[in-house]
Length: 331
Length: 307
Image (tube, rainbow over all chains, first blue to last red; front, side, top):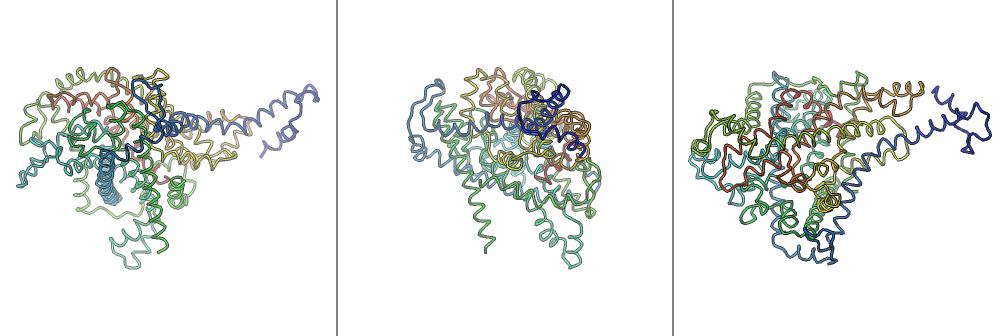
């Protein structure tokens, strides 16, 4: 408050020629006031500018420019030579069975990895929400996979899912189930890859849910138990609706992650030579196809086309999600 | 547009209950509150122990496999107890995958990214939380909207840009695109809007301090706990980032995750060597989680309620 009264007289003067009409003593004061106003008006923009500058240069511009490149033929060795081909890349992609295969794999792996992951996270969060001993240990323990890089996790799970000596097949064998070829067969491979995703992200999502659960006011539970609601009814009628917004948030994040899946299928099984996603492309995702087109087949234009297809997929998913939400609300 | 309104909506309902108990000091935000939870029964403990084992076992087994030799790993039943070769395997992995250089690179990359993210996020978070300016809400929505744009989609032009700049295979190519983070900005805004009293900023103005001075001597001390948490979380993400470093770096100058892929590239796979590399690449973060686990957990949770 004091600032406005002391500074106002100087600050409110119209931005006329500074210093010329005023006496000698007022000139520096007026300059100070001008600086002050500049500071008040300008500083906020200066403070948020670094974020927007970096985002514009390294995220937004590339995203837009991707669409321009996708209309050209560009080879990796000669990046500055761009030959206009209009929509040829898109037409080719539409007729390319590898694209439909990768799209299908991305969707199936996305579903297999996201749905169990979020359900398990919900259960884990519920458990972590109990008052108990060693709660910090359990919380940190469930975050340990989050500290493991995709690369390390994929290498470990490749061994655990190994056909001949892997631990999973050994365990299955000890209960009389025939060994599964977790790499060469389509569905087992997709399950194995989803397992890596589930392992890495369940604990993280559980902590997000836990935080939201702890923000639910206690009186809602009291009211529910006064109404004679069982523990399970309290969970479904108080807890889940109470953290609904967080659930939506994690669904959005996991969906974005699922459309971008790259490291797990790349490293799983074959190591970095695995851009094909298995001998029959049985677990090649759109992310892998993007990389294969650009950096193995040297066709950057086609690679950019795949990127746009991924973007459209993402937009489509959210449009469908919003539509179903609206339909559910009206019905 | 479809994507922009999502986080805003998620934000609104989750926030109101949290903001109800006002003014119990800023650090409350990063602390877990004991609510009305029931005590855990035996079943809950059993389930939690199972979850903990599932979480930790793959890493434990990485250590086991890294401490035996290749023939023992390939036998059934697989080994469950550590063998004698841990340090020799670690040393071999260190040499063969050039992990020394990779560790240095990752340290530089993750350190610089985390520092700059924290700095810029605190600056922007402060502006969004406490300063008034035209277009503030629109800009904040824009920040949130950028979270919905997966960076992978711009990878082709980004690659061309980096080769134009002469940064291919260089660390700046990995560092520059991730100098800021929308999640970080949002996290700091949420923290500061509750932890930093308006009166403190006003008092600074009365004393004639300009905005940067207020930021330096008033905001930074208040923001410090959240900055530490954001630093660690950003460090973890930057250390583990895979797609872009894999595209733009090569084996002569890799980060740790990129170097790890090299270990399994050979035709004859030395399993215990691979596991030793995976273990080495994970150890720095594991150490961080063991020391700062409480802060990281509370940081993720503090960011969660709001976002």
